[in-house]
Structures are given as structure tokens and as C-alpha cells.
Length: 353
Image (cartoon, rainbow, N blue to C red; front, side, top):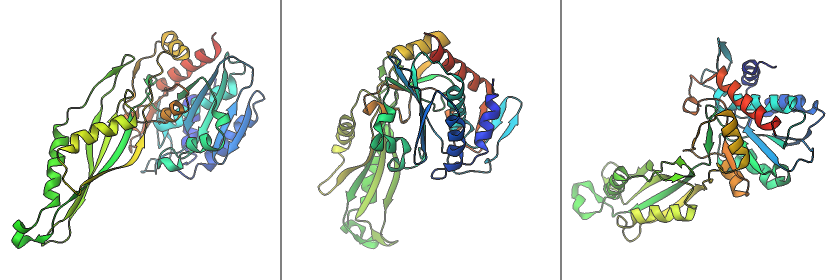
């Protein structure tokens, strides 16, 4: 069997910051085009390999090939059973598992689609999975999708939605020497910030998974000059909402919280939104993965591309090696055990009826 830690190190040493995934995709493509049981198609820097065995069920295994920019950690370094390096956890370990499965499991009990996509770590508009859904949705058809995001080899079910809103507040300009003649829009923003600080997030339990919502100010702008009472200010808010709410319901919830704090001329604008994904814990393949490999199940508290699959009607979950809490950090690393546990669980899922 291939040493998965060495294979991941090989992938780490192929730099692939967002928009520069070509070399690592070239490597994966060359490996998979040599596999006789796979049909391989490349769409830009997105690569899809599929079995066509006529099985009644199709499983999609997906992962992104890009990383964030390097931070002195662009080269792989193995120390015992630990691999250090950019993207080791997020998510070249998951890519290594997918690659090894694709080139070794020749008679899976389900048909399998392996999706290696680009540009996940940047703005949603550039996402390679979104590109595939737009240009070649036929390549992504399946009954369940497992996304190889780092979960420490646990199933992180569904995902929370995310929304950014900009609250624009009006005031009235005046000289600061005669501040009583104006209305300070920045001071008005203080009421918004106070409400956010006191916000009690919901923690709903859905399909046995506890989600933890959030409402946070992430940016504030305002000010004209050092001697002018500002007549405008804005607060950008990020809302993380559980899968039992639609984006429209989540927006209505935030607007209700803000409604008593706004005055005539103020506005609230949604500038970015990604829907949540319902946990797919009741899907037979997820249940098999959990029961046969004794895998922990918990809620996914962030947003991932499982939401794209869910929006297309494909149940999805996150399952991959690596610790998400150290992703993007200078000390990003991956433990051999995580790789081997994730790989063994997926081999069992693909080969045991």
C-alpha cells in the first residue's frame, strides 16, 4: 500500500495557491488517466474521474486542490508520523486519500465520482465546484457526496449557512466644537454593537447534531475628518445560521433584532449569502460509514461546499483527515493516524456491500 503520508507530502511540495492549481492538477490527472476503470474529464483546473459500473448508487467524493498563500511553510517536512506543511490538513491529506482510492479500488460496490476542484479558498464567484455545477452538472450527479474537508476523520454533518449584511446609519454633520448641532452616526453604531454583544445565539439540535449560531460585527466604517461630527457609518455583520433556517428566514431574524435600533434613512443590505445544508445522517451510506467504522458524528459549524451539493438535491457531509482548527496556520500539520483512519473507513464503504 502507498504511504499516504509520503503521498500527501508529495502533493504539498506541488504549490497550489488559489488560481495556481495547474501543476498539482496535472499530477493528479496523469495518475488517473493511467487507471483503466476510470473515465477522466478535465474542465479548466477541475478534474473529475468516474467509474461506470452500472451500480444502483453513486457516491461523490470531492475535495479542493488549492491552498491559501504560503507563510514560511510551503515545503513538506515529515517528523515521525507528523507531516508539516501548507495544505497538509486543508486539504491535501483528503486529496491524497481520494487519489489513492481512485487508483486502487477497481470494483467498488457503488459507482464513484472523484471530484478535484479549484479555487475553494477564495471568493465564492471563483469556486471551481460552482464552475462545474454551472458548466457540467452531469459530472456531479450522485446519491450522496462526501467532502474531504478536514474533520479529524469524523463525520461533520451538513453545514451552517453564512450571511454578511451591511447596516448603514445616517447622522448629521456638524463641527465638533458645536457637536450638539449634529448627530454622530458612529455613536449610533454603538447601539448596534451593544445589541450584538448581548446576542444569545441559538443552539438547535438537528438530526442529533448541535449547531451553534452566531452574530458578529466584522467591520465598522465611518468618519469624515478630525473636527467633523460624522453623518454616516456602517457596520458589517456576519450571521452563521443553522440548517433549519433558510437564508430568507435568517435574514428576517437579523432584521428583527436590528429593527428597534434603526431610524429613518438607515438601511440594511445583504451583500453575501451561502445557504446551509441539512445533515445527511439518515442516508444509508452515511449510516454505514458511521456504524461500521465507529466514526464520530457532529455538526459542521462552518460553511463548506456541502451546501452546493445540498442545493442541487444531493445529500452531503464532510469527512476527511486533518484538524480544521490549524488549517491556514503557519504550524499546519497532519498526523498519519488521521489519514489511515479516513482511508480505511472509505475503503470499507467502497468495498463492503
